[in-house]
Length: 171
Image (tube, rainbow, N blue to C red; front, side, top):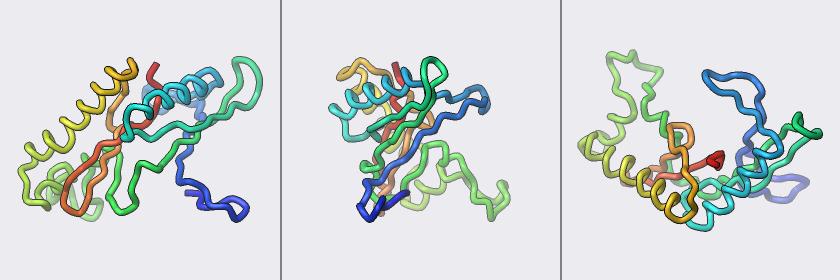
């Protein structure tokens, strides 16, 4: 994070950058029209739920269809006292152990808190994701893409979770 600019404190944020090359099936070209629409969609979403990392600002460089840019995304919904990770990280293994000697975090976390992994996943991941997704559709008409990269899970010291969405590329 950038903590200050010219001595002034800066609100925690992320930067979503234009990347005009293919990564797996996708490329991420942030064109001016896309940036404008994502910031607009994000503004609608954040009016109805605090569980979203708002795309606050965007900037495009250049002219016409070749203009490209970036988006500034708020990190204010993430409490520094909580463990936070993108949802896809729950499938990860500890790199210090061979896979056959270690479970993914999706199993380790519920076990650490003395909970059944299936029950924990249902109550702490699936139901909150469905709630955020359906409430956003009902209130805004926008369909969030809450896949493993666009969904952030926050975990407190008691194992309680909160689900945060991000990325308003949802037209």
